[in-house]
Amino acid sequence: MDESIMSERHKIKETLDCKGLYCPMPIVKMKKALKGMAEGEAVRILATDSGSKRDFEAFCNKTGNNLLEASEEDGVFTYVVEKVGA
Image (cartoon, rainbow, N blue to C red):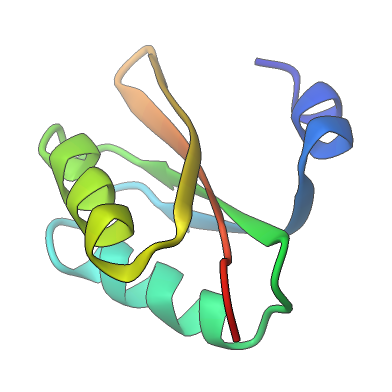
């Protein structure tokens, strides 16, 4: 998906390149990025770990943050997570 279109739809503050990293590192990096964001801002994560979709869904369900997008293209998974709450 075109990044400019995604950025217009969501307030993406940061993009994390987590390609080549495996659980729990993409979640750890996203969690750290979310701490520095205001409510309603989002982080885009690029990952190659095939289990990452399950991990991001579980994280968002547990924390109440919103998984706005989850897609895969050519082995790269893209997630957009919006911060909810302080």
